[in-house]
Image (tube, rainbow, N blue to C red; front, top):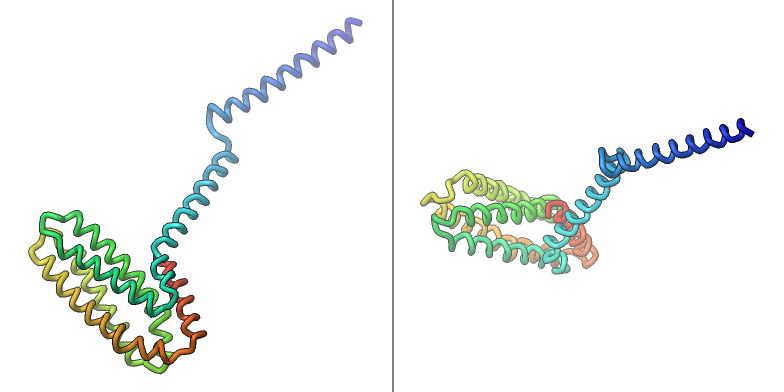
Length: 212
């Protein structure tokens, strides 16, 4: 009888020790250093949330162009949006250094996305349609767009040379826009089939989304 009582007591102590150990482990996980699984789980949730937020932001940026429904209409819409940024920049004074920096950053992003799409989709399609010289000319002009952005970035934002450089840049952009909208793209768009124009539109949206 004594032996059985001792055995029962021993089992009881073992059970209590196991329960205490489990509670200790749980307490450590909750109040002490988090477990590896917990850290990885939180990190994964953060990554997914970040990707979703970034995709949502990209979709919002690209939405105006995508909603145009046609690559040429989308290009014209982006041209108008770009000129609005120039309008805002040309209304600043030498005291508005932060505003100038912000607008310049927005202009760089808008023109970078626009150029990436044209250089990877529209200009190759233009060459394919038989207008190699026009495509090469437009592509060459994009190099000067980058040059102007470089010069404005390196100018002090309160420099008296800032607004004259912006005006010079705008004149170059307006010339480029007029060439595309009035001379080069209309005959290209008319020449291509509906299916081809739709294919260019889809490809243009896909490329622009990468940079949005």
